[in-house]
Image (cartoon, rainbow over all chains, first blue to last red; front, side, top):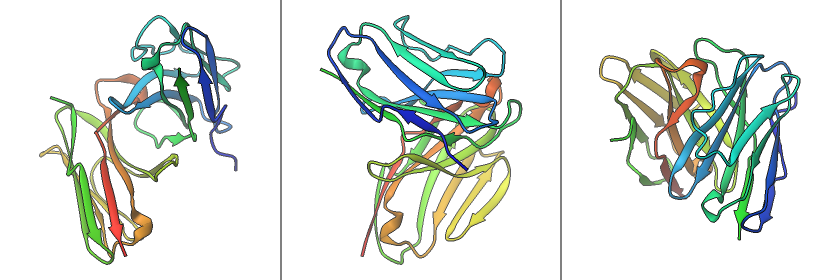
Length: 115
Length: 111
């Protein structure tokens, strides 16, 4: 079946612009995660959605970052007033259920470059 | 100190050699994950384990919960094993199974 998909694959934007990144999780996966991979910081957690529960936003680095998940499926990560330090690969992952530990399936990522 | 530490950071091996990557963590976990990332590629989950040992092809992962340590072994290494290997943990105290990552081990296998 189809894996996790993300779009766009690459995004170049000017400093100060807003960007939206999209994630389509595997059908039926109730948990969705956003992570960021940057050269200086490695991989870090951003935000987590599970079903209709309030998202865990504890990893968002600033209030310029927000995310939503509509209908329990597609998610968008929005970065407002982008800064150069936002340049990174943004990864989405999904897994079957919450509770216990389940394997996470990663999307190919969106490479964001802020000029 | 990071909650998840990997060693070595870089490793070069000749084709056919046995490779070991180590991961230590300092917190209670519900599971440990080994991930693989090829250059320019996406992240693939290799193993998820909470006890004992798992094997898949030439890859073996072990975990010692008491010592808070895991190893990933690659037997009969091949150039296509060249990738970054990342250890990640699901923290026991954290709801939702979000991952905390080690810094990765860059493996280069020369023919």
